[in-house]
Image (cartoon, rainbow over all chains, first blue to last red; front, side, top):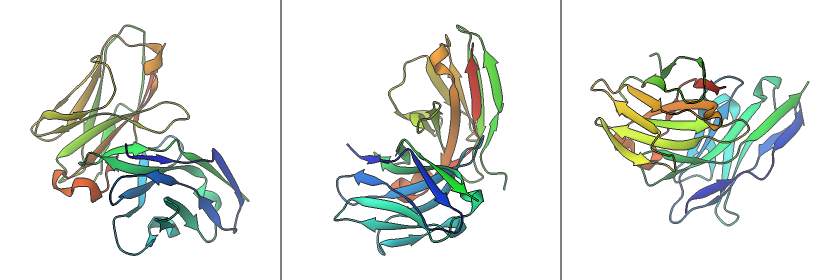
Length: 113
Length: 115
């Protein structure tokens, strides 16, 4: 079955430092992978997606993600974290087509001023 | 473009009651999916509606039902509420012909508390 895993519960990073949020996947065939962000008391906002092509995907708010087939990973990155990046981040994979998404458990990111 | 809108934003119900949550999809989208997000968890797929029919269903009991209207808006109904139904309910809209590579757009959610 298609699934993603987010091995860390919380990521703490100082403002201005690089931010990495980890995601590994288990997908048969060519994977489609998504990252979403959830701010407090809000719904999910789309950040970026990997479909095919370049392994480095650029998304919203300065985020990017690196697709690594050999390590079955799709880590989210930002070169310089902002306090406003503090939020819950979800990796997701579509199941059975038509945007039925399976989400990881989420990573709480805390950016320390 | 108003995006995906959900109502109400918060709701408190008593065990055993019934609740109806509403969702208007993003303009131009024809597919609506519902998710349940318990505290500290990732969203779990409930079901998906397209052309006014339930197209896919996750592992949720029949107490959870839905409807899609001709204007693509949708309702989620939960009967015989349990304390464990307390969660954030998210609606997501998408294009049916986008298949697996089109992102879904989410509403802000309805926070349901069952007491």
